[in-house]
Image (cartoon, rainbow, N blue to C red; front, side, top):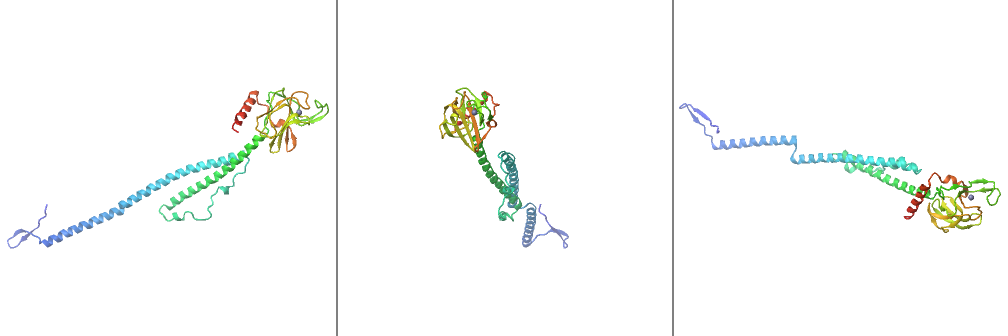
Length: 321
Ligand SMILES: [Zn+2]
């Protein structure tokens, strides 16, 4: 409602309506408008100071989101570090001791970046410490992974080396252990054929004619044929690592000189050739030129079936060799 102003006229004691001049009206309107503007600006400034401009609010929202992303990343790093620790533990506590390898010096596992301040460009930003620590974690993780990869490569090489060595060791009975043992390694008063005292450098197996004779470890046949020293039809396998095995008195030889054999390969058939008074296998092992007792190189705990299964397993493996 329009606010009207009246004034008392002393000449006739009547109230008269005050009429403003147009200039006064304009001035009033202007003043009113100016005052409104001042009040609006005041409140707007106050609001922005308290809550920020829309642009600033968006920016601070983005920063909050980024912080959240970084903290999620942090949790994923922790999981990756746990995995790396597990691999390191397996490396140090399991693989290296089994393979008789020295543990990796701790200095190998520590990152060395040659004194360069890698994170200089990241300094001076808001949230610098968060960003730098995330970068440091990534660098550490990267370093751990590289060291672990190198270590596993060495372990792998060593295990292949050792497996090869194990495969070459004559750790098997040359015949099924269901057959009995004959003359042992050592001095014997009377040689069965010569009838005189003589050293027996091997282990005999009491096997009938026609029994399968197997290579007891991987190696190369270095002798295959008649042995004039008394072993008759004889095979000698060189296993490397200073080890040789000899199989004597055979009725048949199944491998030629120079053949590479694998453990469990059928190399001959038993007989009684050479200085022998009945079918048996003479088996001897030399280590760096010295005769050793073969009894320590095989176990006779296997049953007939277990031994045959083992031979079959070797044979099936040999298809892929
Ligand atoms: Zn013998």
